[in-house]
Length: 57
Image (tube, rainbow, N blue to C red; front, side):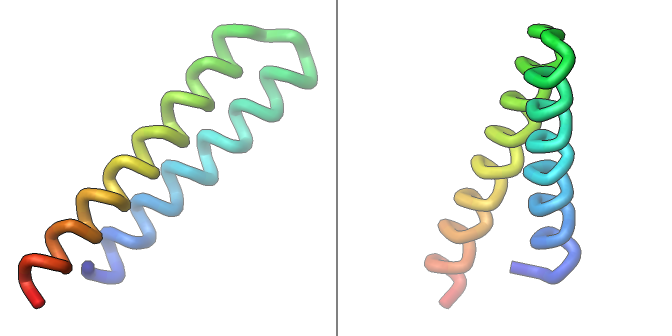
């Protein structure tokens, strides 16, 4: 996995955590849901990169 991919995935997860926390704090369900989606996207991309790494040795 390249460093750029790691940073991108970590950025998505961090952005999602911030949005989710902010949404919870102000009672904004849409923002909270967007945060959960961003975090899930980062987790899924990270898992995909691990699979690629496993096949590429």
